[in-house]
Length: 500
Image (cartoon, rainbow, N blue to C red):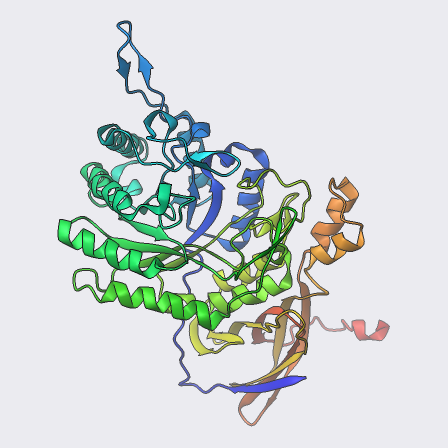
């Protein structure tokens, strides 16, 4: 068993920017019209309290915004329908979520080509008529301003397109064409909502991705274009192996991913005009594929815990892709567990990574310690709160013992909630059940119960003006801990120990 000790004194402080609750990802926006989606969103929000939500497909056909028509003389007239947009945004706001708008993909009536992506065929070609695209953007912003108010909508960041450095998401990964799209789009947004934050280029990893950020900022500086933030994505998957519809690959280390994100931050800060502007990681996860089994595992939870502890060093936000498994990029999943991106499996079954977000997003107090295994906070009432994790890669094993030495005296209790291979891990039980594709009510209730963390209370040793708390984390465990006063308030005569 590996072991280490953490000693805290009254002056201990550590850097920790806890930005994980700022935004969470979804699939395409049109999925919000499904009941299961709404149920998952509300359940995740109750635990994690995200503040923004970002998804694809604002202008795709299932949102029905772009609806040109012909008049009696046969002349095509622009026409827009915001019925579904209102319905989706209303549901987000009711759940405590503000949109993080992504402008895309190209509506078929405006598209210059036929290239599409995903099962639902989002068009990824530039507009054939720039004026019509600008009119669409302005009309959408004007509608949102009229319905929700300029002050409210101006709090919604607005990102131009998604992953244009990848040829699947932007025709030929044509950088010049993307820069032109940004050149006409960002001013269109600002013309309606001058205070709405607008940015890009929403690139993903790959050769030359950092050059995209550099060239984007150089272009915007030269053209004096508005850039309120820079966005990019962060995934950890290496070269994959495919088996049927599923992808398997090794993972980069947390250190490696952080080095890439730091390089992006340094590029932004190398431009005097843009130094210090926010960098939003508008998607992050381990694998970049919606059928990769790692997403359902405790390994994913422990890896994400390590990222949540550090991404705030370089980014104003980092949006997990995605909150739920109502998701159809590569088709409709046929089983509740299939390696989907979501924090929650279909059937409202929490996955281990959901608890990592729940633990981190609800941390309170001042950070007194942070390392590759533990974040510890001192709360305003003098109690302690933290998250600990024990990341072990495939084939690795070994429990981790942590001893905390803290200032204080008197009676305290250590309260823990833990997910690991044996607790809060519904995938393991589903596998033993024979991987049923369609769950019965009984099976569903069982798996939801199995998805809950293990709760435990332990004594804390007190002596010589200090407290000593010990906990053990098994492989890929993520544990939330509270160290709180435990002063006896029992009623006279009450002694359950007589029966224990």
